Image (cartoon, rainbow, N blue to C red; front, side, top):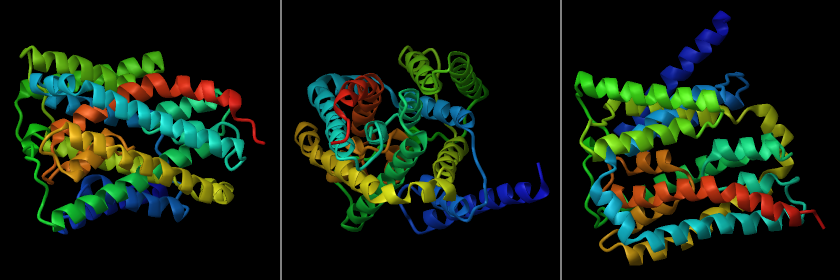
Length: 354
């Protein structure tokens, strides 16, 4: 690796770390994700040429799976069981809304081919990019839309969290950070964590199903946790590095060439993302009515189409109800992974531009 490239990577890591410290000092919600993401976007747009391959992101997905597994409890499962109709309905409606917007945009010729269908999916970004490319859609457009959506929704969530915090904080009882960001951990816990991450990455690479890096640690870790066979905990530094790495990965996707090639599509992309986010905001109200005692921030983070990592990163340090957020977001992952590809194939038959 040339010395210049090494220097650029060192500078990126230093900038990401400095942004994290600065934003945390300013009490900005989601600093661990937002800061590195914005720094990486700056590097990408400057023409630095830094790139993280999708395969390198697998350990981050595995850490996220372990993070969710660490908070899976009988109370959380009971929460999902008590509200499964609302949780399932709002997630199915969010996927359906993405499909409707995508069909309109594609039939109008505002976005090429089937790119809108895959690009507007409210979650499972890596899966949507892979499946979309297999179906002949432009992977550059899909990737740009997915990462624009993540950045836009994260910024929106940070703004909402800031407004709620400024107004005195929401009514929902907070979940202590130690529940999902443990401090000192034992050697046994580290061994279990390492084994889950390694197994998730290995299965994902062997099967080429990238979501296995998330799902295997989540399912196995949850089973161990619920059966009291082992404790799944995430050290603070591991979680911070994973969030920061995820932010850098998303930010570096905004390279100058792709942006220039897709510049004429940007208004349609942003409008689609805005409509998708608006439809999810409308779906906050069933969540607010179903779950007693929660606030608007919790409902927004639960339904926001930016993924579990962004939702948890913003919720950290805020008085949001993490169990409610996870209940809806975990169901979102299941619904999007199963339903979105099927819906995309179905509606693509009616998407020829007029």
